[in-house]
Length: 139
Ligand code: GDP
Image 1 (cartoon, rainbow, N blue to C red):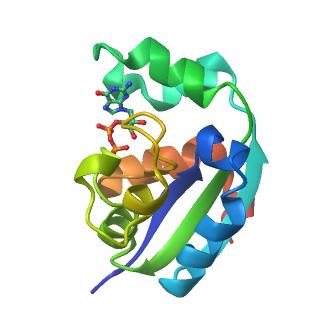
Image 2: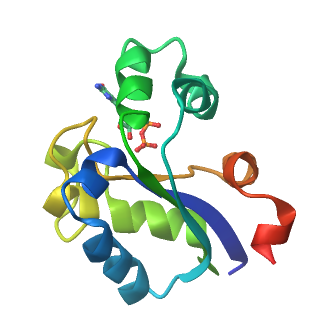
């Protein structure tokens, strides 16, 4: 299996509820390496650029407002098969449909306030990592 990197975000709902430590310990337990990490309050424009693929979706305004309300924690994770492994660790988008033991099942409040983000493919991961981190931050 290939070593991959993926972009994870601890979203503003989870940061605001004091869940950052809990989610970081799940990242540690799943044996990801943290390559880079920072806190950021996204501007509305940054959130819109990040979620540009969703701009035609009905929840786009609500989602980008939520993502720019307060601080998020943006993280580059590395492991074997990191992209799929982090999505498995998070669980399905809707906490009500997520598998037991996953972050979204155990901590998520709603389909929007679902605590974490994870890239969904190699190309998306490359775009999303580059959106927040420069090359010198990723050595
Ligand atoms: P993800 O890859 O599992 O995060 O899911 P998507 O890429 O489909 O959606 C991006 C984010 O938009 C999700 O993580 C949710 O925060 C939000 N979202 C997805 N579907 C809905 C929805 O039906 N309503 C609302 N309000 N937000 C949604």
